[in-house]
Length: 144
Image 1 (cartoon, rainbow, N blue to C red):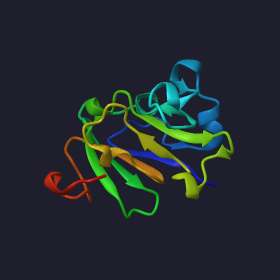
Image 2 (image 1 turned 90 degrees about the vertical axis):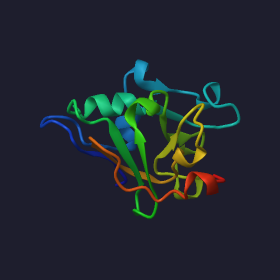
Image 3 (image 1 turned 30 degrees about the horizontal axis):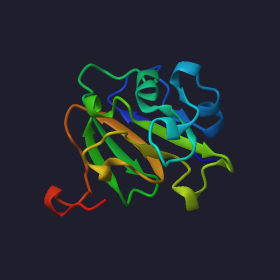
């Protein structure tokens, strides 16, 4: 079964794995039932990344998030504060988000200055005190 992991600088007892069913069962305040209301032109439903991070019980020092694709081929290190409105999209009108639609989980960051932070096939979020792995092209060469 596909799951999303939140690892790294988290306290024992925090939740570290999420499935599609878990995200469907998120509380109302954590859900985004129609992503097009946040990002016009996009479809699907998801949950706020900040809620998932809160559920992982991050340590005070966890100010960075390394967001990686499930296969590890893509990674972006972003400051947690820059992810305030980020949504983990997990389903659309066809059901759970399939690989062909950027799933099983897809990160979208409304208003992001750097679209390369929007990640298809999201599999892991590693929290830490400093930036970690980042496979994005240099800023001057980005055309995501």
